[in-house]
Image 1 (tube, one colour):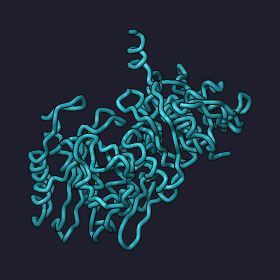
Image 2: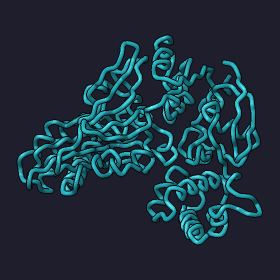
Image 3: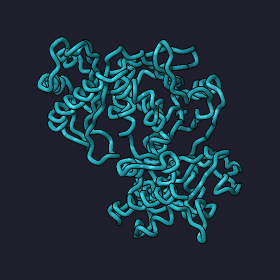
Image 4: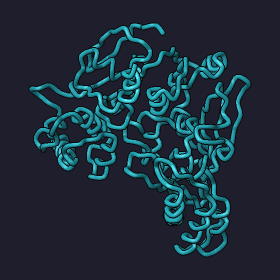
Length: 303
Length: 157
């Protein structure tokens, strides 16, 4: 019946059947996921999964809502660095004075995510688990040298952010593993970071996004990390470009040159949001801008 | 898939209803008679369905009704009464921030959510806070004016 097809394209009701459960502990949630062998999906903020289900790209038979699990909603910093619980929302990132002061690129990136409702609903764990090459929190986490903790039926493991993503929507997370938190080492003194991106309108996904972090030594960059989103099958660090900036006196020209190196290092594709050529040429500028932000912030306290 | 009877707290009133797990909060609210919650894009882009969930603006099209049990839901009709509207509602009327009216409930919800966090927002703060609510009529200028007017009025009260 033609009408059925139209129903799917023109409205976004949740047409499919599924069961719903909201376990109160991590152990219980992992047990349920393991028992359902990939037919269950983790529900956190719902801003991606429910949309995917409405357009029938995802058809789980069970939703495991993890929002009742305690202890996953905090941002805190101790001697060993920063810990961000998986259920922390983008809104919490955006409003965190600690992040703005010491992990600026992450707070800055959060301001670019969706609209305010999406930021109030969407979670850090969801953004990572969804593994989109365009996810705004990932380039900042990459330059923060972050890792993430996964808990599964066989215990827990910590995976560096650089090794977590495999492809668009794909990561090394097993279906019965839950991301519980993100860990990042404390920033060195004289470190600054920044995030910038380009999209068609503000609430669209990024065509290109860049996070940069610089640890300054006098008038030179002693350590540089640069990561881009939407220019490869996963978000990625541009190691060659990072090296181009280290050791020389910092200048806008050097930042621009670093941008050129980065634009050759990435491997963007042409898709519905942008073209390969456009992504390469704008990457240059965005890398320069992110470096300028990071450099200027390295003169303030913290990151 | 089995229905379950859940109790939603909407605008201070508890309403029990039997719902399937795949019912969104948006559908549940409208089926309970809360037609002030508008159904727009149904995928979290337009903000027409925004409600306050525990005081924060969310898109009810991306919340399952079952998830909202035990939480406090406020729709635009719960902010004030016809005789005594909320200052933000009054300011929208006064400033001409309403044309067709379809985005208005969500706009006002997001504006109220903003003013609770930040009673004295700059123009940029207002633009940022209403970025998830689309309006195809007004061009936004009068909506931003309305939020500024409301902020000033609430500061006086």
